[in-house]
Length: 341
Ligand code: 13P
Figure 1 (cartoon, protein in one colour):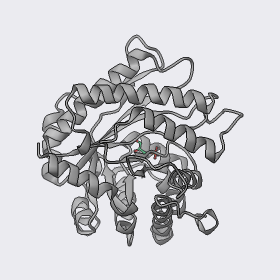
Figure 2 (figure 1 turned 180 degrees about the horizontal axis):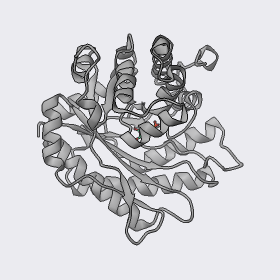
Figure 3 (figure 1 turned 90 degrees about the vertical axis):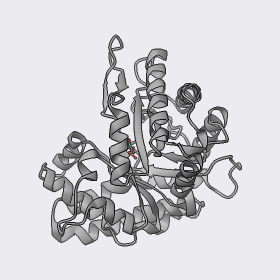
Figure 4 (figure 1 turned 180 degrees about the vertical axis):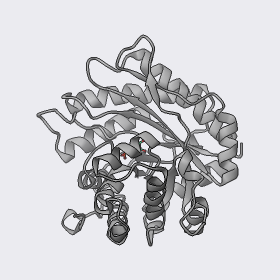
C-alpha cells in the first residue's frame, strides 16, 4: 500500500469543491427506477442511461469521481469507447461499488448485513487493473422498531473495516458508507444519537483493521428527522445536529466527508449541504462534500424517460444538479437560481 497515493486520490476526490456522482445502482434497483417511469428494463437500457450520464458535457466541472456498478464498468458507448476511458479522458476518477448487497441478518428480523467480502481481494485487483481508483461499500441501518441492534451495527462496522483494509492493500481509496435510513417518525435528536453510535463503532473497527484514515472518504447520512416525523427540523438545527455528531465521532485525520442524499429531494440535498458550508458555519477539520445518486440523477431520469430525443434535456438537468451541489460546497448555492424542472 502506498499511503501517499491513497491520500492523493482522496484529495483529488474532494478538490475544487467538486463531488462524487453515484451511478452504481444494482441491476434490481436500476430496473425498479426504470419501471416506475415506464422505461424498458434491459442491459441495453441501463447502458444507454449510463452512457448519457458519463457523456454529459462539462460533467467534470462539478464531478471529480463517478461510482460505477460491476455491469457498468465493463460497458462501452454505442460507438465502442469503454466507459472507463470516457471518464478518464474527462479527468474524472473511476469508482466501483464492491459490496454485493444488504442481506437479512440471521437472528435479527428486519435488519441487514452487507455482504461481499468473499473473493474481494481478487475483485479489487481486477477493478484496479480496469482503471478504478476508489471503491464503495454501503452498510444500511433502519431506525424503525427499535433497530439497529448493537449486533447489527457491530457486524456491519466490522465488514466496513475489512473492506476498507482490502481496498487500501489494492491501492483503492475506500468510500466508507454507513447509512442510517430516513424512513420512520423519529425526531432529529434520535437520528443524531444513533448516527453517532454507528460512526463511533465504524471508526473503532477501521482502527482495529489498521485502515489508514488519511486514505479514505466517509460517506454518511446527514442528521435529519425521520421522513414521517411531524416535527421536521429547520436548516439551522440540521446543521447543528449534523456537525455535533460528526465532531464527536469522526477523527480529524479523515480527508473528506461526502454525504449521501438518501431520498432527500434534489433541492433539499443542495440547500442542506449549502447550509453546512455557509461562511458563518463552524470551521471543521474536514471538507464537507457530496456523493449523491438520486439527488443528481432523478430529475434527469424522469426527463429522459428512455427516449433518445430527450437526452440533451436530461444531460442539462444532470449538469445543473451537479453545478448546484458544487456551489453548495462553498455556501454559494442560491435556491432561486436552481432551474431543475
Ligand atoms: P443516494 O444519494 O441516492 O442516497 O445514493 C448514494 C449512494 O451511493 C447509496 O449507496
